Image (tube, rainbow, N blue to C red; front, side, top):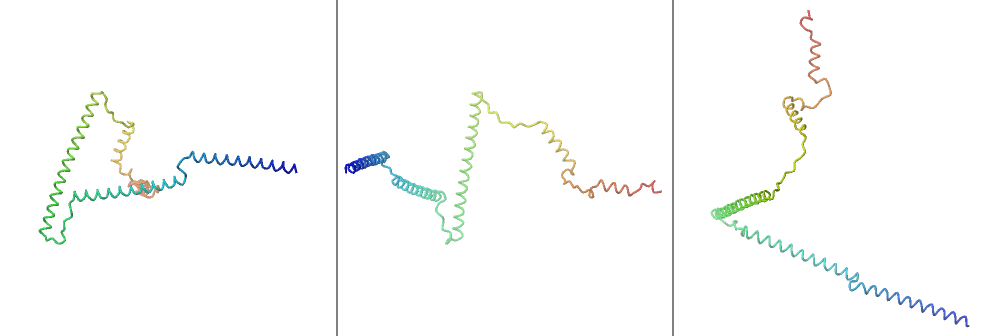
Length: 197
């Protein structure tokens, strides 16, 4: 019996230590979870979904706002469309004259603006040149390395190509179409006048 009680006491001690270790492990895991703070993986996922939805809504609103702005500007610049379906010929001509006058005015404005921009660009480049002169810095263009012999050779080839048109023709390997052979054959078959006698 003493052995049984000793075994039971030993078993109880082992169980108590296991329970203690288990309790410590649970507390440690709770402490780790508590350290992670408010954001659990589920909450992070929900937050991501909410942020995506909000970003999509804002993007859609921005696109709608841009489309409305575009329609407003087009209507402002072009004016409301005229009703010409029920109009007679004189009214249509009047509408066309109005549009033509508007186009002319816009073209004049465009030309004036382009002229102003060109003049400003010229002034800017002139001022840049003056600044560089005062600093002593000159903009050197980047030059390509070109062989002087290459240019001479290209010029010679160009001159040769101008005189000899056969250089541009395709080379044929068969001898039956060449002019030189035909001339030689004709000379062989024909005997000179002094040989015939």
